[in-house]
Structure formats: C-alpha cells, structure tokens
Length: 100
Image 1 (tube, one colour):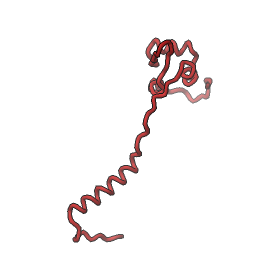
Image 2 (cartoon, rainbow, N blue to C red):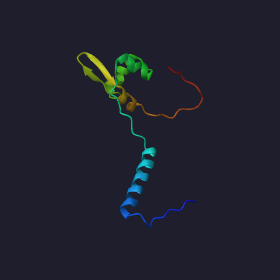
Image 3 (tube, helix red, strand yellow):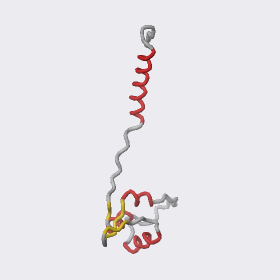
Image 4 (tube, helix red, strand yellow):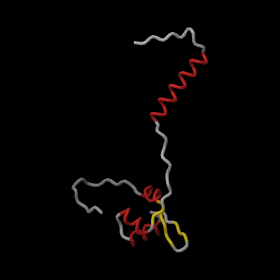
C-alpha cells in the first residue's frame, strides 16, 4: 500500500488533485454522446426499414403512428422519429412468424 504525505500540500492543491482525478474517472464512465443526425428516408426506404408495404405505411402515417414530413410533393420520414415510433412487444418464443 502506498503512503501519501499531505503535510507539505496546501488545501487548494489537494482540491485540484481530487477534482482532476474525479473528472478523469467520470469522463471514462460517461463517454460523450454521439451527435444524432437527421437522416431523411423516402416512403420506399421507410417501408423497407419497417418491413411493411407502402399501403400499410400510408395507413400508419394517417393514424399518426409514424410522423411524416412533406417537402413539395415528396413525403419524407426522419429516421430518428421512425425508430422512436417502434414499440417493443412481447411475443412467444415459438419461432413462428416471418422476417423481412
């Protein structure tokens, strides 16, 4: 075990050392968050991403399940909003069902 002599240190020096150690260790625990990019998806890209048909995507947009944005005559979806619209559901583990 290491021994530390604190008799020759000023209180301000001790505070600075403790603060520096704390900041270094805290930054390792919480890495900086990545910047969220606003990626716009077309109707086809969104339907493929969600593994649904275009008519289903249209229905979901009308009912407000997925939020759409219109630019001129184009309908676009923000990828982050599409991901947020997904809800986790509990399913049986029988292995049935199709995947896209």
